[in-house]
Image (cartoon, rainbow, N blue to C red; front, top):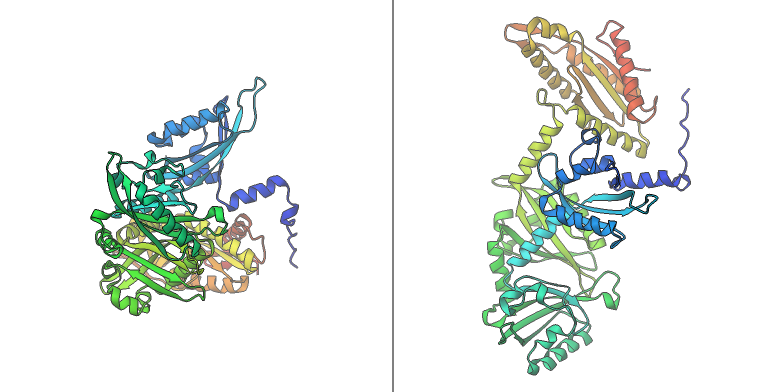
Length: 560
């Protein structure tokens, strides 16, 4: 008769500390605590993992370690932010910095902290805070900034009210006005005051007329602007409304572009010119209010990425979809839906099936809700095949046992944790098989380690040949192996283990002049008979294995 495991307390009934710990674990939040007086520091596992380390590798932790991993260009900025906190000039320490990962690369993190206790003489004692990984965000910002700065125009953003100051303006503004972005005053009337007196009323009238018509489409006007050197230059300005999700008036903005009219060309020609120098393709597509979608623009770069022309793809978008690997299509759709629901940036990596072979592509786009509630994405795709191949190779090397080609011990336990969590959620059994080869030491002693390696490789191949697609086989020790059997009850797991035993016993290994056979003893455990946790499940399977070892080996043992 099975003993029922007591139900855990409902989440709201947990103590505050337990609830806070669960939140930290769910959000992958790094935490740190620093005794300012002694230099002692405490970090959690997530903090260490962001840098590629385990807690043991960083122990004992001290503030001096921070000086060793922070990027030299960011240290003074971080130091100044800490000083502001310690001297009460700021209540919060907040700083974005680069820190060195264990593999040598730089990782961007955002650190926040606060003094939480003081000494008797009112000096800071403990400072506590959090750390989050913002590398992807910083890389996206860098990529988009690079694209914006390569455009043959000035790009800007400002509030919907007019006149108003700029909240953003790209660096090319200096080329046409003589002013760099940080010289342009954010006061509402600064830009308007630099317009020619004869043009001010015209510009204001054009803008007000556009706004009174619900700011539909693009508003365009030309005017003379007083250059920093004193002379006037003719500028063409194009603006479009950018509405935030809450749609409140004071949250409305316009985005636009500025051109020196002497050097101006049509917007389409400019986009095509930019597209020619970008190592990829530019695209624009729209999701309409009725959930239908269509392509608005494709650059010639689609020929390099998809082996298609813009014309044929605009007429038949399914041609582009057909090139995308089936297993990636759902992920792309999910990314688009998530971007539409939250107006977050769209970013997705996927594989293409081309005549020249498989390639990998990174697609990134920024969504913008239109006045009719349609959402338009504007972005680019670039070929990342070389980077992806290296990434996949490194991932394989980090998760695979180099001798047998099976998964290694570290990856096995990572997956066992995930599979057990899934088993709990879905209320389905999970079984674990642990086995090792009988008297394997005799093979190494009598025939040499190269023969032993040949046996391990042959057995790994044999076992893999009888497993189901969703089972996971790993080498977790010298001659010790383990198998995760998802959604598998104990009686079925025992049958699978017996099939593995028979396959091993019937496998003939030929090495040099030697012909060998080996046997294995297998222990089987299931979450139906023990707790759905790694330690008790592994212990149960290990206990069964050793019962088999004491029972003349070459057998399968379980609690059946």
